[in-house]
Length: 273
Image (cartoon, rainbow, N blue to C red; front, side, top):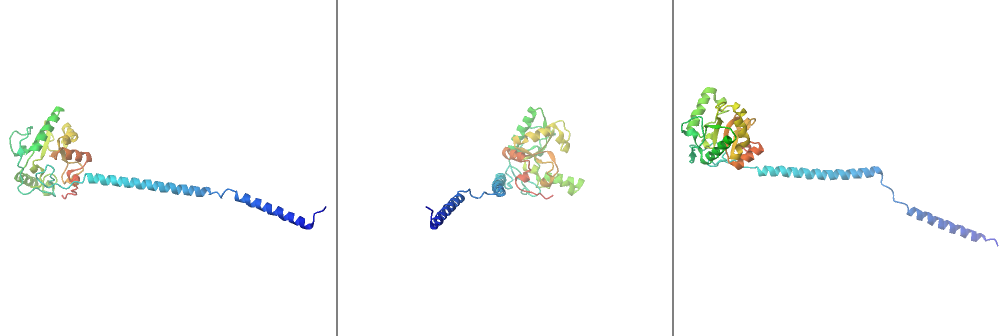
């Protein structure tokens, strides 16, 4: 029996309906659109950059904090108390008028002269330290002599005036202190030399074994080489490898480890000539 026209039409509509559903279902099961490789690259790059920036920021903050910490650790106020072994005396900071230490003694060390006079004296603490320093140098086969230690205001005045008359004031100020601003008046400073008596208070002393020993060992006994080479614009004086200044072991070791002058250590720069 032949199908009617209506049956054929209904069959065709049914086939079309199921075909459409199958196509739509397949479309829904496809993977979502892929992100392009360029997008992936850009995103990764941005992520890496942000990560690097974060790390850099952390490093910078860490470095800044470290530097700030170092500054804070070594930030020392200028010591102006003339009784302190750390007192700063230079062209900007003078001693009180008429100052004379009350504890001056004669250290038991050899000098370039025999007389028991003023310039053989030092403050008691510094005197004990210089005895230990000389003894240690001798044990290492070296022999030191004292040249000049304490100087009163009047002695420094006479000495400075002599240098001014000889070389002129401008030149004299590069190596001699104006009265009242000499470290020698503190009783904490001493000029030294080698026992064979050459290069006495001259720059050539720096080439001696004694001078090299002092550079390496003076801080262990509380002394610093006060006027360093290359620091003339800071200290206000020429290089003096023979001039030792007692500041105490702790400060001396810290100053030497930092490679600075007493002015820099106390943040008291620059110094006017």
